Image (tube, rainbow, N blue to C red):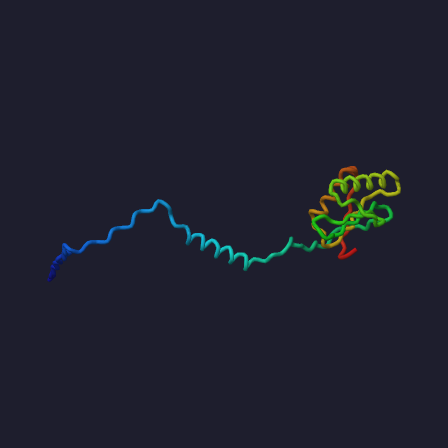
Length: 162
């Protein structure tokens, strides 16, 4: 027993005297004002929520294997943080090397070479302050590495403050 129901719909015709408004002409350019608004809102959001910090500092893990190095037998180079990008680098007696990075590297190389050739010093020791970055320390190590032979090691001592 199934029954079927049929529905018929009549379409109403629009009266002849009603006219649709004309469409606005298509513009070839897209309006980017909302996109610019959204971009500035995102920019403001990220500026307000980001932290403006300098470079990150990392704690150096304690050495698992280390030996003592007699400081009297070492050419000492002291590296401290300084105020700008460049560290303050000094000789073991406290006299400073040049502030110019290229001149500084040449002076460090010359100082280490003279001290090692004198025969009184047999090793190199870099005494670095704890907040010196590894990039700054690498520049000093490169200057020393140009002078010393492969048989000599560069010892590094890190302290909280010198």
